[in-house]
Image (cartoon, rainbow, N blue to C red):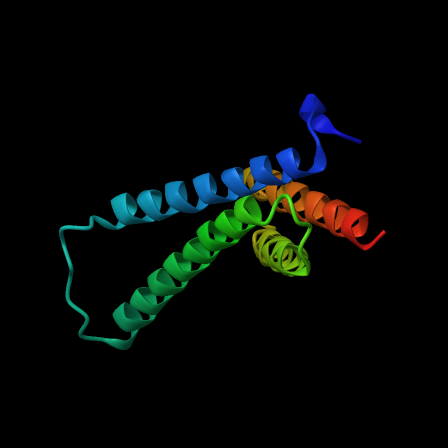
Length: 133
């Protein structure tokens, strides 16, 4: 099924662009949320753990940006790399979805965040199948 009436590689480019957009916006969001101009004091274990979690968040979103760019670049070729990146993106978001099961709003938000990685992996698989056939 083609959404937006495009070809497979157009849909993969859209999915890649959305992943880049999400990654950049989440980095900006975390940066603003933390107060980027106040480094704070890292004197105890809790502060260091919080710092490592922030580094992890940045790494995840940088990965989203890189995966999105690779999806855009390889969208005409149907690459196994984009399939693997799509599966990793989807699994990362799926794990995050199951981590937040206490609040209905969080569940809905995290369910919605599964849409773009699914869209990415779906189109990557479709393009890869077309390449193999």
